Length: 457
Image (cartoon, rainbow, N blue to C red; front, side, top):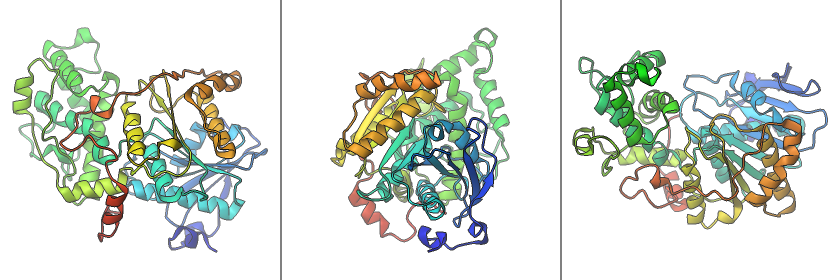
C-alpha cells in the first residue's frame, strides 16, 4: 500500500523516493540516523532513529502556528534538535512541518498522523507509539488523541507540554481582550489617520505592517522595551493599565500582541472567509486606574455563530480520550497560561474520561522549552504507564526525575501539590463560556455533517 493511500491523500512525486538520509541537528549523538522528505500531503518531515533503538516511536506536533503559505522544510529539523533528549532516551522520532503555515488544528493533526504512517511504511510498526505536542502543538496532539487515538489503536499515550489546551474558541480570549484594551489606551493600531477596521480582524487583510512596525507602535505607547526610568509618565501608566487588566506578563506582551494581530488576521481572513469568531460582549474589564471609563470606551463586538462553530470544530477538544495522557506545564508559563490545564481537566471530566489524565507542574518560567531531565522523566513515566497500565502520580513522577537529572543536569522543578485555578479566574468568560468541554462529542458529530465545516484548507 502506498503512503498516499495510507494517509487518505493523493501520492505525489515528493514522497515517491521516501526519506533521504541527512546530517542530524546538533545535540544528537553521531550514531543517530536522520532522514527528511516531503510527504504526499505536501508537508516536509524529519525522522530520527537511534542506533540502539528501543523499538518505540515519538511522533511530534510542533507549536505556532507559523504563518506562511507553504510547508517549512526546516521546522521539523529544528524541533528534532530541540527535543533531542527523546532520541537520546532510545526513541525514534518523527515530526511534520505541516502542509502549510497558518491556523488549522485538524489539518496539523492529520499531517501528524500522516508522518506516523509514513514512518511505519519505511521503518516498520513500532512496539509503542506516543504523540508529543508543545504549545499550540499540545492542542494538535490532543486532537490527534481524539481523532486517531482509539483504544487498541496506533497510539499508546500522549505527552502534552505547555499546551494550549483550552482550544481555539476560548483559548485566545485573553488576546482578544489585549487587542481591544491596547487600542483603548494607545490609539495607534490603527491610528486615527489610517483606514479603520474592526479589531477582531487583527489587521486589515491588505496591511503591510511588519512585526518591527508593530513593535515600534507598542514602544511608542508603553515604552515596554525601555528601562522604567526612561519611560514617560503616560507610557508607564498605559503599560500598567494594559498589564493589570489583561493579566499578561510584561515579558511576553509583545508576542501576545503579535498573535492578536497577525495570527488573528490569518484566522479571520484566510481561514474563516472574513467572519468573526471572537466576542467580548459581557466582559467587564477591571484593574485599571479608571475601570468605568475603560468599559465605556473599549470596542465591543459579537461573534458570528458560524465562525465560532468552525473555529470550535477545528480546534476545541471534546475530552473523548481512550489512552493515557500526561501533561507537563510550567506554573509561570507566560504564553500558554497554566490555567489551560484546568480547562483541559474540566474537559475530560465533562466527558467522564479524566481517569486517563495525569497532570504535572513545574516551577519554571518558560514556555518554549522545559528541562531535558523533565522531558526524559515524562516520556519514561508515560511509557511505563502505557506498558504496565499502572497510572503514575505527580509525586511518583517528581520522585523519579532525579535519575534523569543525574544524566542531563538541567534540573527537576516539579511541584506535585500544585493545582491550577479555573480558566475563568485568569481569562474573563464570555456568556455561556463556563462549561467544559467547549465542544461536546454530540456537537462534533452534528457539525461534521455540515458541508464545509471547519477551517479552510
